[in-house]
Amino acid sequence: MLIFESQREARGATRKLLLAFAFTVLLLALAINAALALAWGLTWGFWAPGEMRFPRHFFAVNTGVVLLFVLGGWWVETSRLAGGGGQRLAEQMGARPVQPSADFDEQRFRNIVEEMSVSSGLKRPQAMVLARDGSINAFAAGWGEDDAVVAVTRGALDLLSRDELQGLVAHEFSHLREGDTRLNMRLIGMVFGLEMLYRMGQHLFEPDARDRRMAMALLGLAIMAAGWLGWVAGHALQAAVSRQREYLADARAVQWTRNRDGLGGVLRKIMSQQRAGVVSHRVGSLVQHLLLVSDEAGPVAHWLDSHPTLEQRVRRIYGRAMAPLPLTRGDEKPQADGVPPPATAAAEGPGWTLI
Image (tube, rainbow, N blue to C red; front, side, top):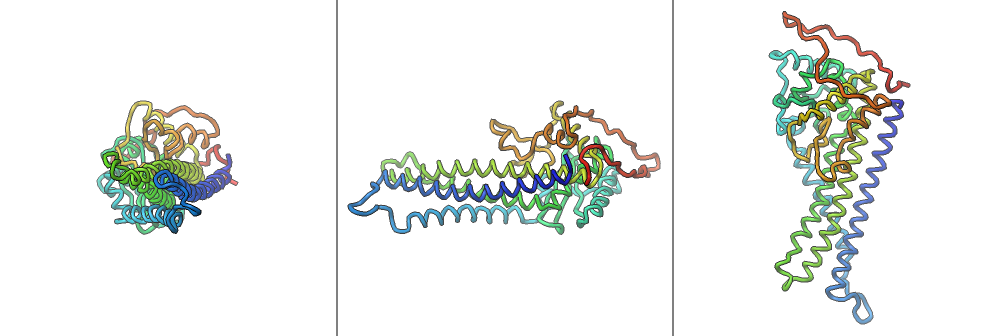
């Protein structure tokens, strides 16, 4: 597949999914109105002599409450996530700034971050390391260039060659370049708002109070049902958007490094890592979408997962299925005097074609 064709497809799919997300909120408002109208009618009767029994502005108020919860939840959650910027979020996930003077691999990582900053035209983000994570993973965080962070695990530093580490960093730079972190945080806020509707219905539905508040319980049950369906639909769309951004970041990484074996090698080593049962440092589901590879699990993980499968991503890079790679570094170590080996220019791979 052509690199730029893949990027256009990913961006086009993202736009469609964002429109679908907005359409989902509209459908949720209609579902809430229908559910509340049904609950109201079953309790007090649908018709008075000659006129409807619905209170004045019944549907307008219901729609306003739905939008208040969705948009209010979006504002509250995104404001909370924005506090402190990318570095604070990275520190909460267990990352620390690199220490290049004490560690050759961390110096190599910082050099690659600086190189990729020049290549991409972005301001150099803060380089950080998840020092206690022996698996291969990475993430980018931040709402803009001024608070951006790129972090990698200790396992990535130990097990990846320079070309592979460069491909991994290029992938994370793409997320910063395309504003994916900001986009995903906003989608998280929208899903949080949808979940708030479900929680409100759950609070109103009190089985122990059915004798006193049958009408309120029915209203709560109606809101719970509609809110839950809206939350599931919103979460599925959020995951679909995130998967398209992963494809776009993969294509951008190949474009910038001109080497399919860079990021491709990373993903193939992670395949071996997963087969060996190596698990990444656990982070909350809220930030799973930030990682290069998530480790979400559960009965609906396949269609609510924020990442495509490794096999799908490798097939897009190489154009065919590829076997996992052994978990060995495969490049030179620093010389005895501590001077790193000279960097070599990455050769263009035969994967995506640059046009």
